[in-house]
Image 1 (tube, rainbow, N blue to C red):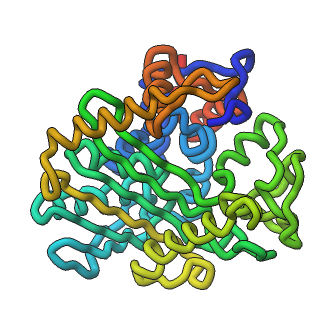
Image 2 (cartoon, rainbow, N blue to C red):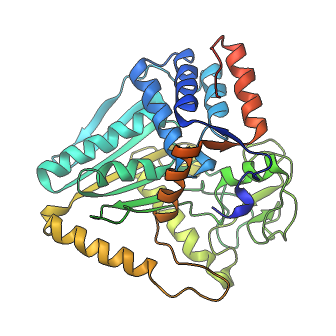
Length: 365
């Protein structure tokens, strides 16, 4: 992530991953989840935190999940079921379970089908937020497969190119592929100019947005400025999100088009209908078994050559090096597992408050 999204070293509180994981799982248990679901939910959040995807870790998301469980929006003990299937496809109903512990089941299903038939696809509806899409795509890469995850809908965030009201969510797309010696390829992005949760990070740290990230209520792109106070789903909101590209001149039609693809694959294909009409969201998982197409060993060697070649690209003036998608996250993971996850003091204070409220023994040191 850009430096402006990171907690400054003079403010950060480094917390060991094992401590953060234990407390997070305990909070989920208090919300009514069984042990497996609580541990899996914590694992998805810890993946984001150690990989440097702070937008989708406990800093931003855990408090929202707690609120949704307390409001009854999320079902802590869902009855997952397959509504329709073929040899290589399945449509899942998550029964209002949170995506942290339901969406991995859909990817596991896609992986099992790919193991038998070369390709597996699963869509899931009636599920909550699934965390970082890259977590689910990487599940397939760990089985010598290429993994794809998309999630989106709801119509609450992105305005179409030339539009003045939102019609799409942030609609992320993630792809993952294994290599032999290089870190796995991992591409995980929102189809908006900036992920919605990054705005929460900036609000917490009182830092401005870049120009052409958001529009005002009339659909006019905003210049660099402080983020308006209201949340992305808040009442009376006077801003919306632009597709990646920002303006038509800079290619916003591409981000808008990709956002539409995600809505079609996650919402319309799963049967819930267009996201801005149904006000619902869905997930899409796909796994490609590599040896159904080519030799796994050759693929991994070729990926090494591809990824190392990207990293060896001559850097432009003012830059030290070139990265490939997945390399910064892998390097961040090594640092944070060794030195702890850097949380903002406000996040640590929230942990203290919620653990006291839920009567959980608090220990992040």
